[in-house]
Length: 417
View 1: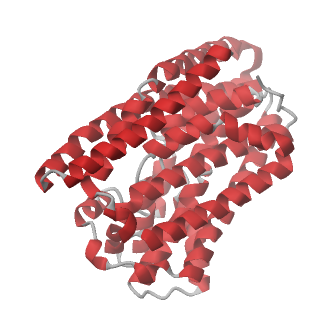
View 2: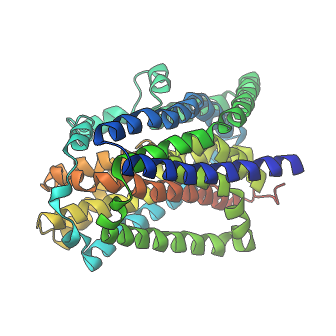
View 3: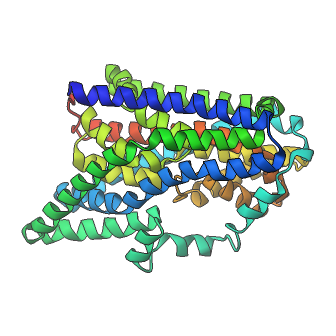
């Protein structure tokens, strides 16, 4: 136990050191090199972060499938699956609506769109996003949700598709009963092996963090913080309000265990913050929640669902960014239209991957749907990485809290390690 704690503390120190070093190196490159060199340096050093993210992504599919199927099967009967799933969806929908409303109220109150200048548009980044939103529609969304092949879903890390298949597989496994026990045991072992791999992969986290931070600062420089000061500070206010809301509700339910939960997930929060990828901490978050006292069958069921249906930070940002862009271009949206946008985002955001810029893809599609100039998305691209840090960490908090709360409601929350 002491050894594990020491390792965790060392990893946290290494990650913080990597962030500071990455910022310093990026700043040196930005200040003392040509624009061509800065671009090349940023492109190359970013590979360190890409390698780390890909290492994590390679274990997401087997972990989600094995843990979700085992979690559903261990619940024992379909009535339990429905009860736990219903409680989870109640939390997810309520949290999503609250997050979306915070973003909507802040933009209408503070008017951040009045402070942005269109001269800073990132057209190259916009083209990259536009290729991801071609033919975005309800029909395409439904086609995307339902997998035509589980192997294709695994190969492309389509988490929502994998969740859909895993739920069917898990429910069927539970229905088969005794004869399915060897399958459950085998998948349990698979999950244990994958979690072991997580420990190996996490040793690369400081290297990935260094590369990611150095790349962004070398390319954009420190001036980006000043240029987007108003926009960024209002966004952080929204995140703060969301954290206060989540912490407050969590404290009402978990009582004095809420600070313990925050302490337990501090490492995943830091990694998510610095890599801007929820996927990067999914395995580690699974491990920490079980140590906190959540039963493995609850964690295995709720957490994968949360990654598809409960991205609180991303939800808040979607209304915040979409309505800000509308303000920039003087597009007046009545409150009724904004509420319609909120409901549309409730649907279109489900299943977005926990990877960088996934939220912007949905924002771009939403702008097109509500006749807001889509080129406005390019205005927020330069600062999106820094916003993504906070919204990704918030997603992790929201999912950890959802899993812990449902565990408490089910009477399956022990004192942990």
